Image 1 (cartoon, rainbow over the protein chains, first blue to last red):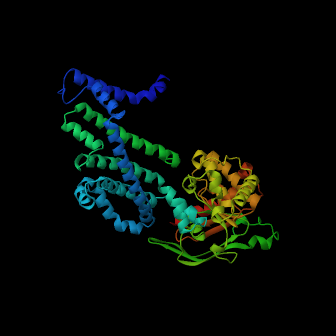
Image 2 (image 1 turned 60 degrees about the vertical axis):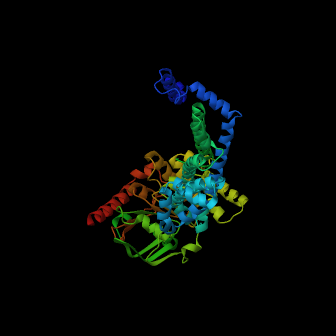
Image 3 (image 1 turned 135 degrees about the vertical axis):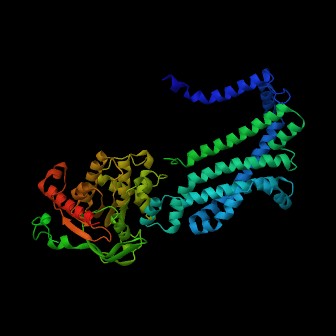
Length: 253
Length: 271
């Protein structure tokens, strides 16, 4: 019975363990103190930065870019994925192209997008949207193609037209897989946005914050920015999971 | 095909004409799969208002037969008519073996049942009225406001059957509807199906892989041969309904079942 009471607190053990090891490493100076500030200094920097400081502003800028990128990606990739998935022959004919660009590191596309859109936000957001769109497209198309055959037959045998089968069955069947695509897509979009903020003439954003703190040797600030980026990624994933549970209540059942 | 099993059991003269009136006529049905001939000029009559069980060796094409009759699988040649009319002119119901994959998990049970009425473009009030009437007639005790995955297997299959019945079909097809259920639930569902059949008198075609079930529920048992499938026998079983557990030990039931088993074994050995 005791085990059940403590189960919800198990995840805390890892967090506490990490902080303890960190503390010990600082205490015994395992690592150069300049490179590894104490947890207290780091969390102070995180708190001060997020509560009205520069870090909070950068956090919001990165969030903004990531959300914009995922919205653009979803708006393009979901309808396209449905169209491709609805006809297996069409999907097969573009599958190689999708797979090829899905496997191409999106960061390799930066120079091209720089030429197209200049050094502004458009480039960062569009590269992130490009990367995320391919991930979403692939998942939506597979979700539609892998719709349970019996379910499609059931709709057909009840007299549903091809269009009704698509809207009433295939679309809903593909939703769980669509959410997998959205979650992977948003993670990828965040990675691309942060990298873009570091290296493509940016004046704000978490990537720029990490990079600048490192250049200035402001280590607590750098770690704080890294944790902020981690929190952002984790939070976005959690958000999509909660939305998924709300909308796709039948997933996995 | 006069066989001892049904000699003297068809009451002479009673409903003579009605009993032989065919609801579905299959003529010259031919179907090739890439690797085999499944049906070759196959003829069959399905009598009106009767429950026909289809039984035969594994892979002989029991399900393929009802899938062709209901248009789920195209036929290579032949003709299938319902009272002389093609499939598109009639209303029919179809119940899949895999209820888990046949129901729509995003819809509540009640909305699953009403879905075919929605396809028929009936107004909402009418859809509700028809569903409520059917549920009341069948005396089903399932919470229909739940989602399918919240129901037991038997309840889900019951919802599937109601979804097939709500359109008031002229004919109902069931493809091994109880084979995914445990034995206790199978026994219960058999009697549910029998009750529905007695209640509605709908012509019913049941594909079964369980001989006891096939005979217990049937007015006629269609025994198929190995590929290409032909009618090995088309046995009558006229025990009064409702049939109960006691039916299973009655002489007539035992005899018909033994006969069917003998035909089945003969067909299996031929392969």
